[in-house]
Amino acid sequence: MASAAIIRSARIYPFLIVYGISYFFTELGPNATTFVYPAELFPVEGRTTGHGIASAAGKLGGFIGVFLFPILLSTGGLFAAEAMAAAVSVLGILVTVFMLPETKNKSLEELSIEEAETTDAAVARAA
Image: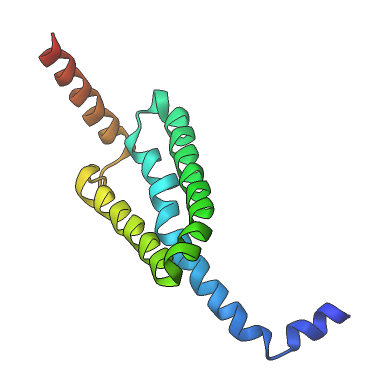
């Protein structure tokens, strides 16, 4: 009964709206790069390994951010801590947009063939 009264309370609605918006943008950006993109980039034989590496890198980045945020907050203030978070976010989008191949309108089979051709060409140049 107490939880029903809390849900009906008008004070919870602004929190739910802000939480929903922040969760949407969290899932829209970093999670697309960490979970959706590897499924499209890695060949079928190594897809699970690629997902593991991408997931581990994301978790390592999260750990480093949580560890460094209080240090930046105490030394440079809130602006320095938020500026560093923004810089890392901008770096992430630049790497995603300019360094990773485009997967739009391509099937997983087409992407696997392209990966195999790229790998074969690299092996041929090395030999």
